Amino acid sequence: MWKNEKKAGVVIKMDDKIVLKAENLEKTFGAGKKAVKAVDGVSFAVREKEIFALLGPNGAGKTTTVKMLLNLVSPDKGSIQIFGEDMPKVQKEVMKEIGTLLEGSRNLYWHMTVRENVYYFANLRGKSAREVKDDMEMWAERLRIQDKLEEEVGKLSRGMQQKAAIICALATKPKLLILDELLLGLDIITRFEVEKLVKELKEISTLIISSHDLRFIEKVSDRILIINKGKVVAEGTASELRHKISYAKYRFTLRKNEESRYLEELKSIRGVEISFYEGNIDTDILELTFEKPELIYDVFDIFRKFSVIPVEIDNLGEPFEEIFKSFVEGGENK
Ligand SMILES: Nc1ncnc2c1ncn2[C@@H]1O[C@H](COP(=O)(O)OP(=O)(O)OP(=O)(O)O)[C@@H](O)[C@H]1O
Ligand SMILES: [Mg+2]
Image (tube, rainbow, N blue to C red; front, top):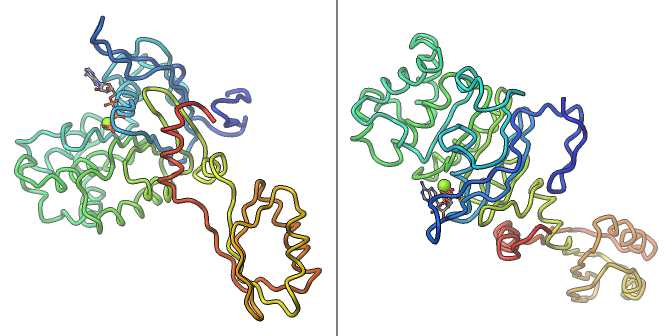
């Protein structure tokens, strides 16, 4: 449907089915001196059955973007297409296929029980209580809230409210899930369960998620859009983002059977730097930084030539937090 196009460094291929496409979204709150440009020219496309993450510091514009996708905030500029339909036209039909989580419990009715909330929201999406009952009970069990289904949402703990809101989003088996602040208030055990759960949901749905838990985002996301001050600063898989910021770095433990003569040849490879070396009698420990990952072949050629055997190789890549910080602090597109 869409032609080959390049957006923020990512090529969308013809055969990728695009579920959602946002172009040049802009939103300013307030006017005059108090005006806040919350979203400033954000574009992205989400492919079918991928987990697409919105990442950014507080106030970056993630929630405002999500609200525009759901027509809860109207954009000043830009366009949105979901399932190939222009939004907000035909909004009602499209919305039936979308499961949403908006800053946790705020979209639930506090005087209704968890079960009533799930049935109510399912109903809005054209599904009867009978159709969603089994799924609701299954998710409730997995999120360990099965004994709270008959309790009023307003009386539940913050984390339990979040679980209830997640179940409301999932119960109708929507084709698209938009889950803002997915892990908000959840304990560590539940976070692990949610991690498993989103990977399973990917089999049947497309997911747009946001969270401040970078370890979680790095682990589950197929693609990540980093937003800062309303603008896209990076887009790509976690490993693409990593390689844009830092060189590949590995630690080798090497078994050698003669002097470390191979070192001289290693030093002559352009684009490979020895950042650490410790020579022992029959093993060497070596840390190498690669400007391009494929330079590792040249290194292996030299190891072979000198009969040096790598007995252990460790990836010394920077933690994702550092990558994220560097994009946000760097400010512009790298
Ligand atoms: N209804 C509103 N009225 C005025 N300003 C708003 C409104 N909603 C959001 N903003 C402002 O827009 C900017 C972006 O906010 P937004 O909630 O989209 O950020 P976010 O990325 O979701 O942040 P967080 O990680 O804290 O949830 C912020 O400066 C915020 O104060
Ligand atoms: Mg937010």
